[in-house]
Image (cartoon, rainbow, N blue to C red; front, side, top):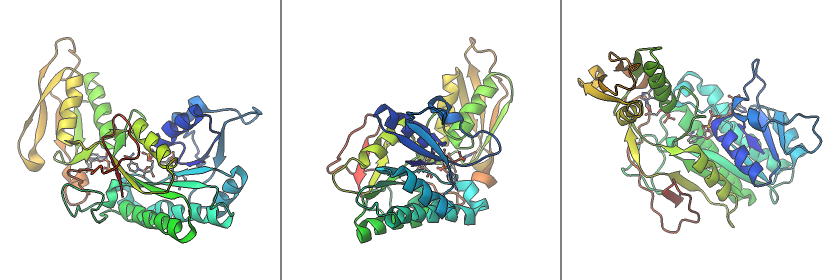
Length: 336
Ligand code: NAP
Ligand code: GDP
């Protein structure tokens, strides 16, 4: 069973598990418009008798609904990926974020316990590098203490400890995957990678001429979601439940990400100015791509994404004493 099946990771994980021969039960929210774009290629009509991809309406804020779905589907594995996953939006909706991301995890754990499934059902909790927040040491390791700096991070911290607590108190197979940022063409369009790549493509097509972003010095460890869902799957196949940190070990600044994106389009950028006055300009442009606007600017929009408002996980180093699995693309797998 996958909560958050309509999200980036839910879509990749569904494909992976279906390929492995699983029957996948996904929980999706009711919306006034279709919200299943990412999984439409997997959709099977409810009238088909031998379906292996089954969608249920549900919500992490609704305990009785979750208990019913878990009871009906009797899952061997639950991947709790559902969440209000945007750090900035969590400042606007802190209470809802706590309910869905924090107590939502408790509801899943309780559903497993109340239905007597603690021996049968393994559970993966989508924890996050945002738990480190105001980093207590650079580089971070699996021993670095947590210090979340956003309502999202705090809600996920509650979920993290609940998962550990249920594992220890009830002997459940429940694990946290502390995943650093992972992206893909399916990533939500307000996250910085998609915001930049979409805007760059629009600039190249002459549709817009400015991309506004926040802190150009912010750096992130960006991996690919397809690799990271495989790590989730492998965590539930271990002999013992454990928590893992997953990262690539490589950090890139937002500025370099922008630079590299424009390079892909044949345009070289030049950054001028300091701090909030820093702007990027197209310096030269491949003649084969005359549609790239020469006046495009990349303007920092600091009040929305400035330092001090957002957690900045600068550099990470994962120590690999005995990694229990290896996935190309992920260089850092650390047991907690
Ligand atoms: P995403 O694309 O934003 O997907 C989130 C999913 O959760 C969507 O299917 C969303 O449904 C669903 N959801 C939101 N609120 C819900 C609620 N109240 N009840 C049920 N479902 C709800 O996120 P993602 O990138 O796939 O990330 C998956 C998980 O990993 C999330 O828990 C995220 O916090 C965590 N995580 C992500 C990253 C990353 O870099 N991507 C890193 C670390 C941890 P709708 O489609 O209806 O909105
Ligand atoms: P997050 O790591 O979960 O907050 O993922 P985001 O993709 O939203 O942000 C990644 C990093 O880019 C963070 O350090 C943000 O502060 C930074 N950032 C800089 N400018 C922007 C922007 O315009 N939009 C977003 N979403 N993030 C930005």
